[in-house]
Image (cartoon, rainbow, N blue to C red; front, side, top):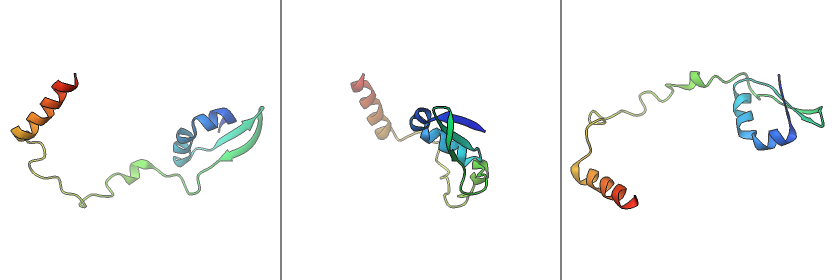
Length: 84
């Protein structure tokens, strides 16, 4: 079980919550004394198990990897030249 101090917890809360979502438990301490524990509300959530949940909800068009039309490509190239 990982232990962090209050400053680390405030600074890295998003990252700590990501680890808690994966089933980790994290203790928060103040002056070396444990004062709180971050635990998941539900059983360990494996992000990999959520991959593919939207399968068949979106169909990739057959021309997805085709080159852009010239007029659209020219617009991108014009912007890139002016920005640099």
